[in-house]
Length: 198
Image (cartoon, rainbow, N blue to C red; front, side):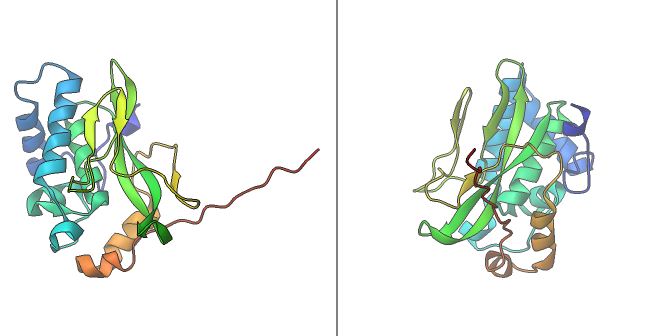
């Protein structure tokens, strides 16, 4: 479980601004549930989604997303994981493969989180930011993510990553503006293996 508590390049919770915000959010909370809820609401509602609000720069590290107050879903998931880990709560990264728009190809990866809660086990939550057509909530044990899986080619990936997928960080580091990243969103190909009949 230690790997889901570590401070790393992108989930850099030991930086002073992240550590201070994590402590602030935990004030008045008497359980891991309360802390996770407070961290989730902060990232969902106070860190603006770069594409929704058309904001630069492209933030990648948790500390950058917090400092600039903006990030794509990937950076927001890095920040949420960092805030939780700074409070001693194991947290990881999860991914979905979704259509970019209009429920048809092309596809891209979408970043969200999983948190380990004492009373519920691993619980997935999505702090990308709500809008008129998106209503993600923190309501364990019920999962209420931003996006459902609707068509062939979309997918929920089961693993919980301790560090970001390389495809995600490579795309983010190559983009200098939100528009540039929006045109080159990370994706991975899903290989379908048909089971041979006996």
